Amino acid sequence: MTAPQISNDEYLQREFDKMDKDKTGKISVTEFRNLAFTNEFLRKFRSTTIDTYITELSNTTGWITFEQFKKFMQAETHAYKNLLVIIELKQAFNEVDTNKDGLISPQEARKGIILAGERIPGRSFGHIAQMFDDNHDGQMSLEEFLNNVQKLVHK
Image 1 (cartoon, rainbow, N blue to C red):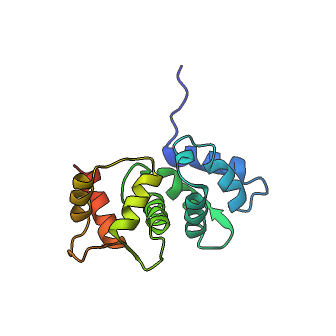
Image 2: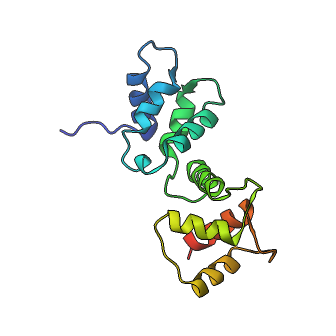
């Protein structure tokens, strides 16, 4: 005799209920954050990315409801359009934008690539910089960065 199958929603509800010890229908963002960091894939993200994502997911209430938990658990974390991935990319962009003008100059891009541990020859770097500069103004905006990363991911 086989055990009865449960739906994905039922499974998620059971897991949520285990964390909802006081049976209020919500868990604290601290408890949720601890859960997030047990996920091997999510440990690849910066802790600030996870914190920003949890803040947005909870609508800054400090609590996660079952529906928010379900949204998180069912998200395609490998997909480019996932909010977690977008937050990570925005944070990376902001780190490279050292003068905080909302644009990445070729000099900032080169420093960012070097800080990431990559070495790109001058000609190749120039070609990459031009690929990411859609409006040909010599700099890369956040929108250009996000659009071009998406293009690279889909190739």
